Length: 209
Image (cartoon, rainbow, N blue to C red; front, side, top):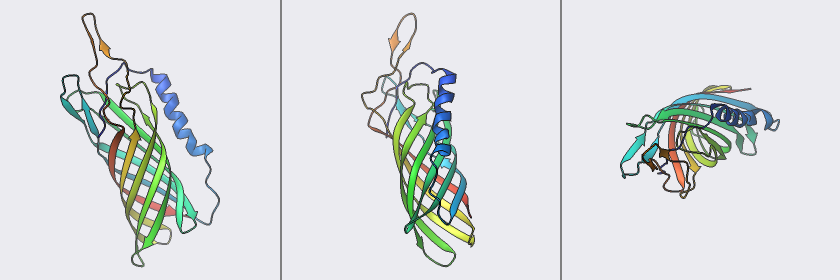
């Protein structure tokens, strides 16, 4: 599990522009035109992570609600599409705000269990926008894996229960600016390890047309 380092707050305008650019990929990456398109809005809960201060004390990033959206279409024996998820939280006891926005290209295979029930298994690749106080770098490579169940009320409407792992690549030797005042300069929080891992549990409704 990854650990972090504290730096100065980034300019608000720059952060908004980078997040807007990430979301804008949804509009400029068109899906191929196939017979059916699937839209799946969902709400869930995402685990946090851990950070450590210069004294070696460990603090957890609070888990929090996550909002997600997927748009997919049929491809071969499965489906392909785009997945977006956002989560805001804070570091427990420190109060530092965190935000994670994921945008991934994903593919999945569906497996029919009964006439009404099916399961799925998939992988995803993309980018994570991290709006955090302690990092100078906002946009990083990320990957994911997911599985779940769908209960089909009709051919075009289903309830979806999903578990998803999301991992963001970080540089273990990454150095951001440290906290400083008139008497001292010190790093309070640092990265350790090469991946920041989160696990989501999502409940959504899948519409197809």
